Length: 46
Length: 534
Image: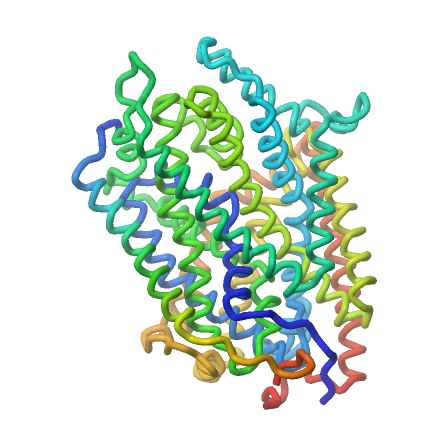
């Protein structure tokens, strides 16, 4: 625990951060790629 | 079937950022790194991601779907929506907890939020009075003394004595901001705040991250480099994976971080339209929370702490969010070049994370009051303001050793969340039916939920949650009950807090009863006997 960042530490850090960043980017690309639906009159849902 | 006119989200991104804003809180920056460092470092990420996959994401999808379906039937509060999904009054009255949780957590959360704002103001005004050249013991004492004064841990009522501590003003400003934004409504209030606050938090977080990763340790120190800080958090200790507590901590971290079972997502999703996507939206909100937690929280706090105060002092701070954030990091900022700027920026991130969460806590109660009592926005805001202030003032006054805050946090902010989530996943997977539930989830969905999640939602998630609940109770409830029924001032304060909680539960249940009579009279399908109208 007191050692500097080991190969295992690098691996877990890069994989974990890479995974959440990739998931976030993938989600927002899909979300922002879809235009908003036009609002229904009167602010009511179906 | 008649439907009352209701509010609506302004955009799809708005609801995602609002849910993500609700989820991203102090725990992302303070609790996660401490939890990971204590429970196996990098190896902690194995149970952590498994819990995300098998617990957090599926329960989140269920909650988004339940909320949207309830909204189509004209309901926005947890009691009514759980009544629909559980097909009767048992679910409806268990849903009382879905109003209690956000309201009860709001009772103390606004105070923590006001601490963050107070620290921002102090750093902008020149710091909190820690002499970086003093011996480390003196710095520790100064930091803790400052925190004790701000929180009033010495005695009940100490924050209001002698004309009142300035934190009282910060609290009033924070409470007023919350009330104002909630009064403005979903789109103009909560959504607008989250649309600005979330990107600002991300940018500030990245600025601080760059600074932290380029830090150099003070002269004459060893084992305090950035690599040492990262190693302290990320080096895997696989032996910890054989300890049940590691798995429990990982599940708890995921669970409480994502705000599932909190009564907020179910309310927010109830304002969505039938063809609005909930699957990709739910996943995106979860992903956003994970970005703040792992990519920012996992790199900033512990690393900066190790560089400036070393591993020993950092370890003292990992015991809880409060300790790391309010007692350890101020010493770091005192020693860091430009520390006042970075201290202000860091506590501003915490404040923004906290206010986007606390805004979400008032909205479910407000919606519940409107639909149960038939009152308008002004009246519901007035009632929820008064109710919130009663709770805030109770916690503000009973500040000794933070007993009131900790009691509400344990029972309402932790235990009841597990209960509500279990009710939700059982209602979705077993009472309503997992196939019907997934069919509802896929209406208007931009992605399909992978087939394996049918089994996960029906079997794995409820069992996983049950194990977590039992483990949590076994590890924590006996001690909590002992301190509740023990002797002394702290036990007395804990019992008084329970009186407040019981009164709140009783009031919500009574309002639910009144609401049920109204909904029946209006011909609403409060027992979920019919499919939602198209």
